[in-house]
Length: 383
Ligand SMILES: Cc1ncc(COP(=O)(O)O)c(C=O)c1O
Image 1 (cartoon, rainbow, N blue to C red):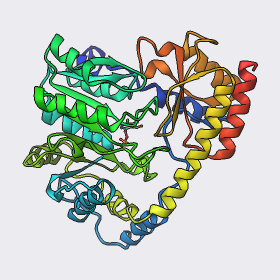
Image 2: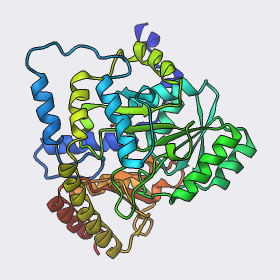
Image 3: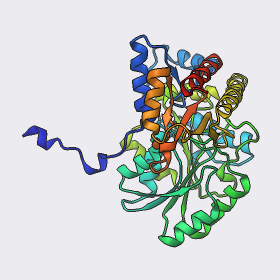
Image 4: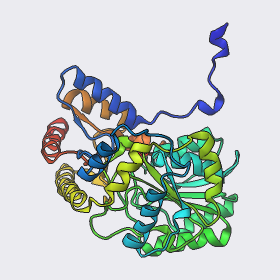
């Protein structure tokens, strides 16, 4: 009887985040003593910056680590606001900054704040799988705009002409392709959203990690954009679970009410550490220089094996077309893991219709591992 009562809700029937499934399998193989190189998730090989660690340790002196304001530590909100002036030349009032539990917590707050069940939100495809999954759990329909190099303003207009869009969610640079859209096209997309009343959410989690030119924040083009960002990637703090939103004037109170009840506050110790991470630029730029070397290693090696590669302008991913070797990226990634000890993410995670021909490699790992992984992939492919 009780088994029948515990049937999952329809909204819980979302797809798995395959990168995390592969990570669990890879970790299990490691525990069994296998030599596995992990390239399946975007986790920086470096620990948090020294200043962040020191700030966290200093806070562990016996004083209570209690809740913070629901929208985060005032000093961290002010420091994030300053970051917009320093990094982008854009003025943001601290009141518009909402600290969240990773950008993942930010999505939950932003989606609840912006979209009712039945809303339609356009996303790029291929794209970060959790967009589809979180929106799906909220009964929000996703409309896929296909494009390995990003989306065009015309695609947004055409989708909106077909059936009114409530929102557009884009990241730049992209996971899984690494593609960085031009400022001109992002500006034009922001203008389409303004003109047509489409709520524009810009996921800027990979800002700081571009190798040819910097990425500009969508706030430069629209005060109505909702910005999502995080300390997970550039700041090397994945497990600390701190991110932030920048919302339009007057909207913070909406997020505050949601966060009061859904999270109470973001994690306090992690916020203290995150604030200090803003002063660790030298250390973080050295980590980034390592990614740049890794990127060159992968582009050279995978290109040399005859794989077609997506742009890889930023983030720390290479998205490779494997169709010359397999039309089943799930099976292919399993074989690569089991036979070669290299964990990579099957493209179906990012693109349910065409991702069976693609594999994503993360190059956020150590350089020696990248070199060894490419040697193993080459042997595996018989190239
Ligand atoms: C595009 C994108 N957005 C958001 C996230 C979630 O990051 P976090 O919740 O750690 O801030 C990720 C994680 O890989 C990502 O790739």
